[in-house]
Length: 485
Image (tube, rainbow, N blue to C red; front, top):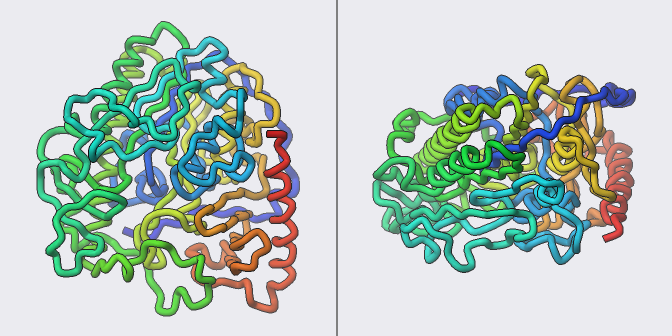
């Protein structure tokens, strides 16, 4: 597979922001589908030539596919709390795995806003942060279990449903890839790279149950307006899927590994080195290639469940009455820079797939910078609802009519566990660690270096650029906190 590259536009094109183009509002249903730990580069509609995702591709074929959408936190908790509450992580203080409700008080979350305006609002599985559905919470009976809701917000929903699954305990052929150099470690749980080619069909696992329940809810509530959140847990580790989904990615030894350069980490500050690397995970090349195969199989399984949900929408005759959104909570490294998993502020971790399909809108590809935070005000406006005061996202509805328009000149994201902050413009990715940048700086020329291999922060020719970004970051942080919470 050829390396995937984002399409880039010049910063100069942002200087003349397009005027808002009127978009007709209607009381649409909202179907919000979110995958967990999904990199945009694993989707065939984003250019992947190996991992096939026909059901997600079908949503993109009818919607607007955004090539430069960014999450506001590069791991699950802060990202999900942010786009559901409508506030940046540093506005609410939700920098980990907590519920935003104590910080936002009686302000309505995104789904709650629709519920307050007469919609049936439900979630199936993971929308706010909650644990991966295995371990002690799994009994095989499909029921909800005490404590399983995690950092979920009860006020956001008319109803909520969980989808327990066996995860790493699934019957099948499994291997622990991480921290297992001699191959003697059994399949283990936790935040660990594990591949399980599972016995049984799709409904054995959490995402199959989630798709089935979502389909039932669409059929049951087809005669009323709904905001339905469908949270798939794959491809989050462990990489578990029915064994048939693994066959296209075998033999694992043939799976593509991204470019790696000697000395790649030499010019970046210590906080810029990811928490999971091939070295500290003790993954040799065979295990790395198998990890990619396991990830792709998990993506393919998740995509099949998207197909189940979309078929239910079509069978109910609701496609022309429903806004469909597909996205992920953040991106994911699959060996780029010898990094794995999330947390970094490089594009493959901070960038997300984002597809918005609105009935009557022409299909399009939009290269404008957008944030996950923009979904709340945008979908509210498209459905004819007012946008609550102080919401920090921007209404990007005009991009659905004119994909060449601009709403933002930079995207902002954070990596709280390493006190990292990103400003991503058309031309540069600027990353600093600590609010005063004392932890180090990274600066990448995206046009010349889309793979983000060469840190320019210490180059004399870029001193003025770094200085300007420092000022801009300080202004952004002040803006983020000016929220009247």
